[in-house]
Picture 1: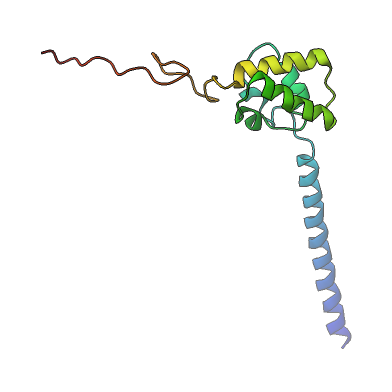
Picture 2: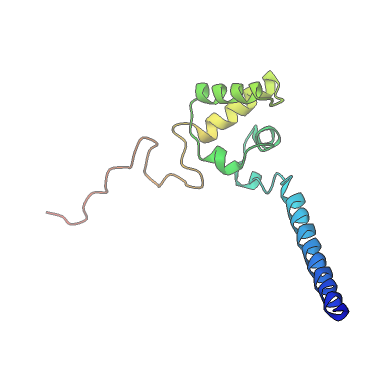
Length: 138
């Protein structure tokens, strides 16, 4: 009987070691995900321009660039959105807000090209250009 109980202790000790290693791995993974860098949030995806660094510093603290890039809005829309963020605790001065809204409106306004896309040659923001004239003559 003693031999059997000693074997159980060895198995229990091995299970405890494996469990401890698994839990420490989970804890480590969570600590790595807890505070993603600005680059992890997609700062490099945002178009260059005046106000980008403010958007990176103030907006990417909570949101991903992909979220921002998926939205389109007028100056009023972006002002309302930023006002909500300030109400929710975003630390943005009036001067910073003006610069952020100007950047967002310029790059993610209603007539801006979809993110990652450029307008095709000969097209306008309101729609595609007329088809080219036929090359076959009368």
